[in-house]
Length: 311
Image (cartoon, rainbow, N blue to C red; front, side):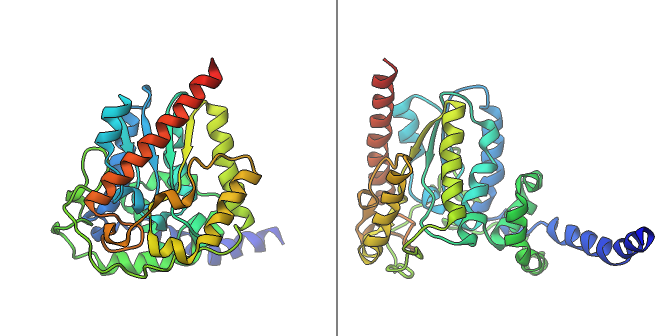
């Protein structure tokens, strides 16, 4: 019986495992030319700053298109690393990729996009595209549950990588890797365009249990490591906020019920539609400036409260 099981594994399962590994490890040439390159750049910068205190921004693309890190650095007098890239990586991996570089006293600004369901927490095909292309070692960070949730996207990543294998030359625009500045922000002139799906936030009335557990984990991890966690809402187009205000208020209530400080109400980071570039989360240059001013106010308030508490 034992020999039969071993034989079955090597004749059926082993080839499947090998083929899956080959599909996973295919880099996507198009991804190399886009803002997704910030995953590797952020990893390298955090590695160089692992022994000093810093400000680390963890988010999806609302952080890439919505923060002026130089303003934060000049005001807080700490180096800033904006790790933001793409919500499709999933909230879990946005944090897991970089948490080993965080040290006591670091300020972590955590502002993931809204959403619920496995795809929001664990990611989708973007996860495999980004990791295979920019940070293969991060595959070791995936949990068993995350593998189960995202395995269906392996084939999609492989065929996309094959389709993009002829991309060789950089392109221009805010989504290009050339638009990433030294902090990780998208620094490319952009004005308001027609926003895609301005009233859609993709957020249900309740948070699923796994997402709830992970938010608690981030909070507890920060507390155990002596990090200063500043959990802020993402920047959101005003019409989208108005259409789902009750759902977003339920998120705020969830945070309060679980003793997790949400450092601002969702409405504070709802900005006029004209300040958004092309999606409900991507701000124009001026919108990013205004958002950073509010973010600075909130971060400084958290630091002041911590100082008073310590004294």
